[in-house]
Image 1 (cartoon, rainbow, N blue to C red):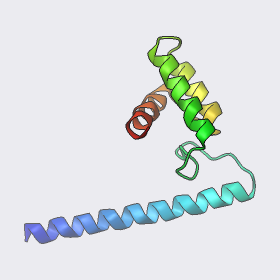
Image 2 (cartoon, rainbow, N blue to C red):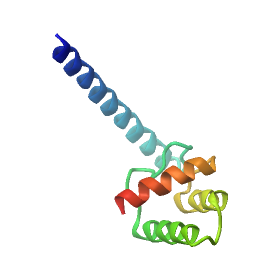
Image 3 (tube, rainbow, N blue to C red):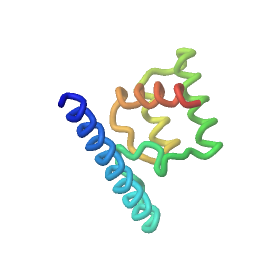
Image 4 (cartoon, rainbow, N blue to C red):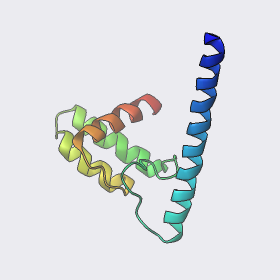
Length: 103
């Protein structure tokens, strides 16, 4: 019984994630159609960064690691690079950690 309940929870979570992804894709398409900047929470627009954005992100993160500036300046740099409002320095920290895991 426990195994069945676990499987049902996993299925619901997977379904929820798929729905969320579909909604995000629709939101991105709509925003691109009207040439609108995406809101906070749409970190990499369509999930892919351009080569230039990747290089800019790497440079900004390395400069931060080298002590050239703090999290709040990194937040401003991410906002400029990604074209979306990164509203907090804590969010910039999470983005940097996630970026380092993938690049």
